[in-house]
Length: 150
Image (cartoon, rainbow, N blue to C red; front, side, top):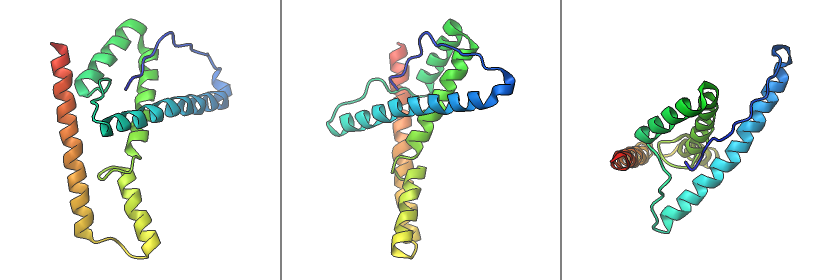
């Protein structure tokens, strides 16, 4: 992901000032959303240029990062990290790729513009290919994570 948490500053908010916490949470999500979206688009651009991104982590890399954060910085930094991961998943999920919500949005937009639904077999085939690509990427990234361990 290219994201590192260091010297996280925590601001204590009194429980009766919950609105301040909500506003701070949205500001933090927006901040990380901009950083992650920029990183995702740079990563996609590098893939189209034929470069393999090195900062991508799969389940093994995420476990390693989570363990390191918990061990070195504590549970509050770990909760913060989970928040960042949630924003990352939201951004990746909205990408216009089959089998993700962004791919579904494209089919809904097509249906809205044309006034009729796309061919169901075509939609299923596109989503199946998208899922196959995503699962293949997960396997490749996990293999890369395991290789990095050794």
